[in-house]
Image (spheres, rainbow, N blue to C red):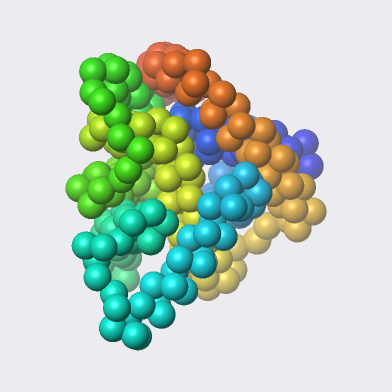
Amino acid sequence: MSIIKAIILGIVQGVTEFLPISSSGHLSLFQHFLGVSGEGSLLFSVLLHLGTLLAVFIVFHKSIFELIVEFFDLIKLVFTGKFKFSELTGKKKLFFMFVISCVPLLLLLIPVGNDLKLMDVLSGFAEDDSILVEGICFLVTGALLLVSTYIGKRKTLSADVNPKEALAIGIAQVFAAGFPGISRSGSTISTGMIFGVSKETMVEYSFILGIPAILVANAVELKDAIEVGAQFELLPTIIGIIVATVSGVACIKLLQWILKKDMWKYFGFYCLVLGVAVLICCIIGL
């Protein structure tokens, strides 16, 4: 892979990971049209997520640090016999909501035969030469963004995430993790909005929630890559990660500004148009 391609894919990853338009779907499209595919490309795509993970730590470092402190405080409460779930507030309660949202990710580890897990089967959609699934998933993302915009304007939105919302957000993240073209940030933020959580709360919640998912995905993919002997070029990968980090920080800030301007629906229109365009390309054989 050339350094130019690595820079392009790094920008695509950083921009699309945080804007609600699906980084996996866009990376799959760019790899399709740039002629970069196979095991190495999937490994490169997963490693690029390390760059966006760094961006999350940079922007939300204060909240992440507070959650870590609260985690150890919770451990202390458990061992001293003072833990009561009904009395949890603030970051302690938020920590448990993150745990609930992460539980559905275990569905991706369900065995489906031939030593494969569900996540292995779904990851094949990003590796194959077809972009049909990506096109359909972009349409799903676009519809979800528009529905959440419509419902969000007709509800009194809350700044708190409760167990019901946390579970629904976690299920949305599973679909995003499995299908290229379904935006993780778009689906989780939209799901929260549909259930009555404010956009501002959901932006931070969604991006911090992505940390364990990204870490697990990287760990599993690196393990699989070592087992099959997948190769990747070190310098382009490092450059891609750095570019993804810088563009990721910029796009988190951009998304926070966009949400204040009530422009969420335009991402929905973009995904619908892109989905139709991708399906047309698929039909005519591009």
